[in-house]
Length: 183
Image (cartoon, rainbow, N blue to C red):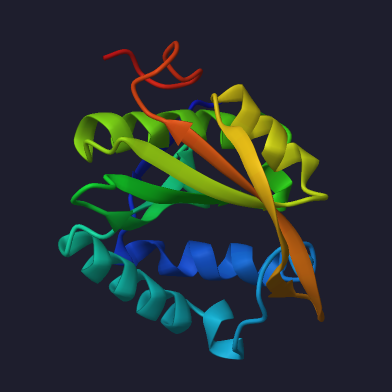
């Protein structure tokens, strides 16, 4: 099996991300918001990447891609970074459907936890999952996240308001995240 890595997103990732989003559009309809047609094109992804890198330059995000064997297979992003008394961010991730079930998501989340703690010096990460997204919940649990509540009708996707489970992980507690490089 090829090893999983993550790195900062780059404008050259636009075609690969557009292809994955386009191919998995229906697969992820239940989990993601509706997007304009432009989103599914390389130019649309270039616009998204530019925005993500601007947020990164302002210290508000760490937008990454998940890479296996030199191929971009998904994204992992720490966004909505708050400094001051909070020192927290929001974790989001996805893996192209053809690469799911191989441990890439878990390894990418483990590496993102190390970046959040070691590079970004965050105290806490938060995440949300829809109640039915058991696979994502298993990944979060594996990495020490705890659920702390349900937000009813929190997220609109695929024509309906969806309930979401909120998750938290205080960084610097417990054993190293599985799949993450040693300090």
